[in-house]
Image 1 (cartoon, one colour):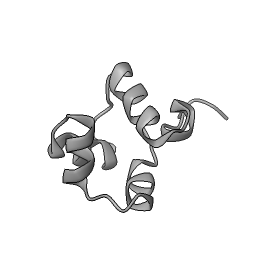
Image 2: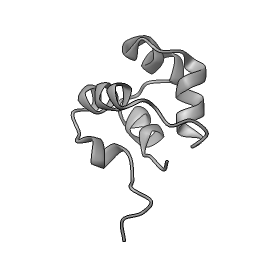
Image 3: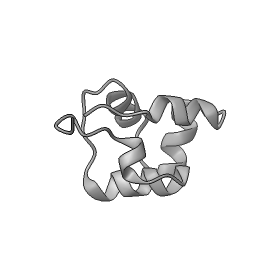
Image 4: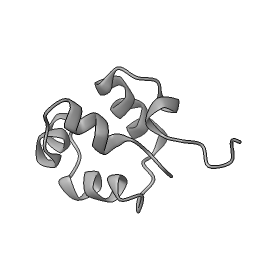
Length: 66
């Protein structure tokens, strides 16, 4: 699933390890999500969106929406 996690993370001046620590997930998970190789669970997606204070729809892009 396409996302803008990397842009949001960099915009906050965080590296992957910092973000992982704040979200209480592994750095490898952040790497995989940013590379579009892992789709987070819905609770994790909401936690990320809340951290960045954006709606989930602004963080993850619906590939089926025209």
